[in-house]
Image (cartoon, rainbow, N blue to C red; front, side):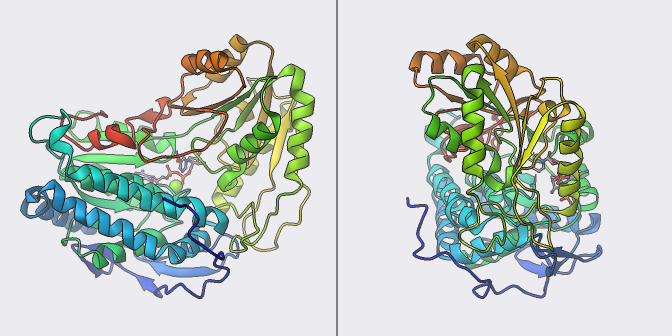
Length: 482
Ligand code: NAP
Ligand code: MG
């Protein structure tokens, strides 16, 4: 399928019809939340987009009960082929409404329209198409004569790829036969609420998908603690992931965790440098670096260090930071004030601990949350910026001399989500990839996603896989995860 179905990028919000206020989507209808309403703002202008409800624990009870009834009475009794038809319908509606979703995502998240238009929204549709195709094939792939869904899945997603993370979670769960209560991040609820409308449009039976907006500490915590939930799927910070695992200890609720990362992009001296420059840049500056699998550590072979850094900084001066709705914008806004403060605080340790800082010299809009692309050279493995996930547009550069040193440095991390290798030697590519403790290793490319590829981490990056057949198994009784 094509990822660029547009003649022109949408440049205004006029195609959006956003309600002044959204309720909770429970059992196929909209209800006011019992918690306090809150505004979602645009991080590039700080203006309010709309007001959303907060689900408290009583609302969570109602939503989980609706999902249970829908599971028992409707969804678990349907054939896979019937479930698949709904998923295909959802996928097509997402494609039809792609422009609208791209604008909404850009306004709510702050990421460039180029990215939502070409990556987030087309991939979200692709995920539904892919898992729609699985729904009627479960019986025939050796997963047992009648695969059993888990029941009610609670899904808690982050703000960095709001609709895409929803698709990663909702599509396989529905294909496998589960019903859902989903909580989007408090700063990016808009496309999840629009997705509720898509479910209505697709005629999805009531209660199969329920969308609860709210804060993590209220709505999220109530979902995690709910005894009627059979599966928790979480993507977010390692700290919250740990807390969820502790809450679930000793219960039979299944859990998959997609947590942080500190991906290494390893560039050998024989790499095609033009290609590597592009890959290193998009590896860390795509979505302002707010990507769990970002290539936030550049490991460069010592002999080409100066040349590579020179090329990278030269290329960076051509990037445009600013209005995310402008189709020429490369670097958008940081998602929230809190995230900007986290990035700033970690980046500020760089120089203190002895690294050399280079930041793109560019004008930053007066309003909104902005952080210019930044590179630290002269970084030691022990430095905070080499160890902690920054989740922002900050690249930490380390050097190595031999392949074994590159492997050791890449693996010297609490995380193990992603890595990239740049070399023209196939034997070296395979040998190094084999030694890396990372869930995904890209070869002469970075940040490539396909619904058929399982994605997930080692070590503190979490457990369980999303994507592919393994992503489906995570929603089946005999499947993967805890
Ligand atoms: P976070 O708090 O882990 O947020 C992820 C999701 O979990 C959100 O929906 C959040 O709701 C919810 N949540 C928060 N506390 C919860 C709790 N006690 N129980 C249940 N759900 C809860 O992440 P963040 O604060 O937005 O970002 C902090 C850091 O996490 C980032 O700097 C980054 O390092 C990492 N992060 C990683 C990913 C990833 O893709 N792996 C994504 C986002 C962030 P609220 O939105 O209301 O807090
Ligand atoms: Mg949070």
